[in-house]
Length: 86
Image (cartoon, rainbow, N blue to C red; front, side, top):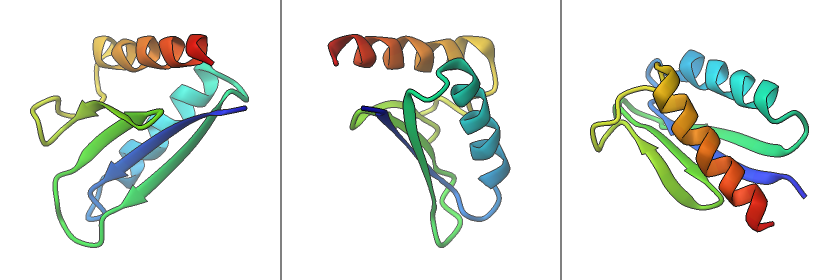
């Protein structure tokens, strides 16, 4: 069963950032993730990433975008831990 990864992003312009992250995660975990993105209907500044229902990355809480290797590796670690738990 694929692990759920949900990204809520600002619908006013962050879709490309979501699609970049989705591709990178799919390349890292081929066939193991169910990634869905939801653009907000108005400008929110959101770029929130949840793994198995747990908030792992939050632009609104100061994490910014997933734009560095360390931020990406934080998501990878959370995904690996969630996959290990089954």
